[in-house]
Image (cartoon, rainbow, N blue to C red):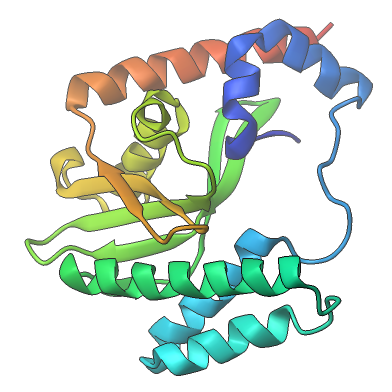
Length: 213
């Protein structure tokens, strides 16, 4: 089964035919260079906070995950910034009145017999007014343009329709910048969701036609 990572959805969206050919000939690059990425180490620390309720334990986990690096001024400064971002995350999480609800959730959405969407919802919370708020974690977030990415309405629909059977307007989605701890959040309309699903299906069909050749 061929997969489109939801992280790479914009790449597939920009040129589905080219993406399909890359899948067919196996030329899609794997961005893995060994070791656990900084984003995941930071997420591990966030989960330590949610599991224990102590920011001090979360900071200790983050410090331990970077302990094998060389002790340079640059590395110390980067770790300090990530700790500040972790502290900012906790402050914003509490201000929003969230209750952490679920562990990291796998996205597994079949588009055609040949292809499916895969990926993660990194954090899922219950909102104080009811409903859910799902986030991915990234960096260098564009405050406006992130909302134009196709993956976010798709994630909102997945949470509402596939995971919990709730109304679309009960779900928020967004991205947390692990270099700052800032939450960026939105909620798409039913019409936005339908347009996104239609575009996603068209992408899937185009790629599937390439794979069938």
